[in-house]
Image 1: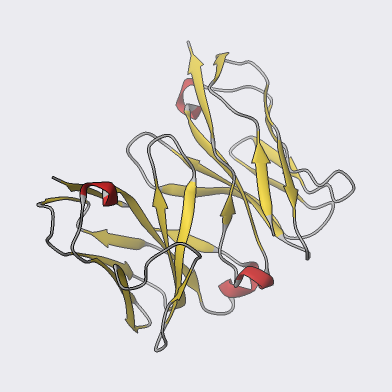
Image 2: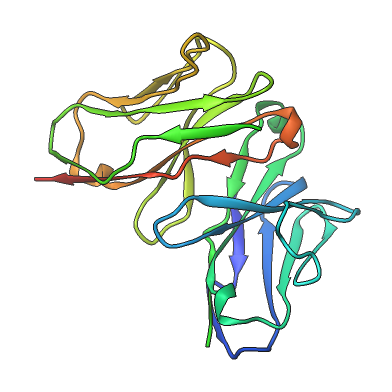
Length: 119
Length: 113
């Protein structure tokens, strides 16, 4: 149990296009999902916190108009990179925090990540 | 704000050697502490966790003890295997961050036969 999927796993796009990444919790409900970005050989940096049915909370320095996050249901959050540019190329990872009782342990389950390459 | 500092790698060990990866943290509240592992080409997996001081997390031969007095959560394993080669991330979360994880920079471990 506690599986989180991401789609696509890898995407290559042209500069100026938009890319949507989906994050799904397959066998549990997640009121909160997190989006992270990982640069090569570096740690994960939190981009935003997504709560079902409300607007996402973005970390300082993350452009909310560029990285659109939608959390329309308890099992799906999407990240759309709008007007992508080469500097947006990165590894994007989502995680889902399960609702109680798992939530009591602060446990997050991670998706496998999406490799975005912008040409 | 909260932060996590872990020893920089890469760490190279021979099979069956003893492993220690140091991790220290700063936090305003009472965080939960985690070790995550990322195998080559795969996503992050929770390795172990501890939710309060003096708790010991353990899994797959790995152990870490939540030391509030030294603000540390060092990862140890008595005898590493080649299959343990991966990147290890120390992390914390607390209610102040809305349970988002704050990660250390990661330590790459390579175990040679």
